[in-house]
Image (cartoon, rainbow, N blue to C red; front, side, top):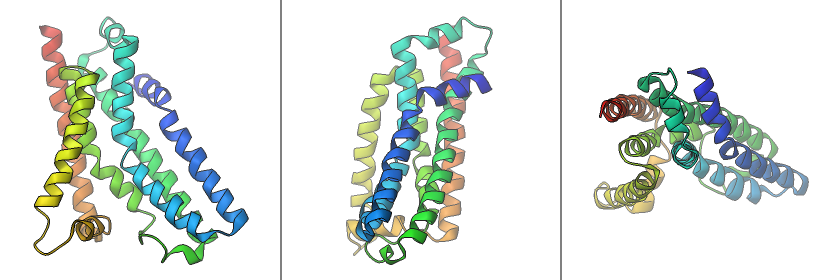
Amino acid sequence: MISLVWKDLYTSRLMLLLPIGLFGGLLVFGALTGNDEIASLYFSSLANTYSMLMVPGCAFANASNEEKNRTLSLLRSMPISPQTIVASKFLAPLFAGVLWSLISVAALLLGARLFPKAAGIALRSTPFLGPYLVALTLPTAAMILIVSFAWNANVAGIAFVVLSAALYMISAIFRPAGMSIMGFYLKIMSPTPSMASIAVAVSLAIYFLGMLVAQVIFVHRELG
């Protein structure tokens, strides 16, 4: 199991290395120039945006890589249970999300020390907004993996686009009465501790439930 998870983490390593290089460069440039706007508008905002892409991106990258290199067929020929194969595909993006969460928290705490005047320029957020946003994307990543096991990575990519559009439409239509889309967005991005805890717990439950569903689908395909 550990070797399978490590393989997938290594395959999607650019999902972590590229933003680390980008945001690290922004931190250094902002510190050298004393530019608070870079720290807030670019560093903080981009870091939080990327938090919403990390787990789904890793899930889709791993699914696409398995299909491109046909390594899934190789794994099925080895003495590894189908449940273990599926579990590794779910755990690798989750571990990437946890790792990115730790990096984003450390980076935002460092950014707050380097740029104390940047707090009021952009969206006010706590350093722990990144992990919260990572957790919110877990159901989407679960859907990508379920669809990839049921059909293929191409269908999973289409499903991701459709789901993203559907979630936007739902938030636009069913937001609280009298609240603008931006106001609703800002409310989601500024959770209370209880709201964040509930969101993380529900998202994790959905993610692991999705893993069980994918295992059933994969086993059924193997028996078929």
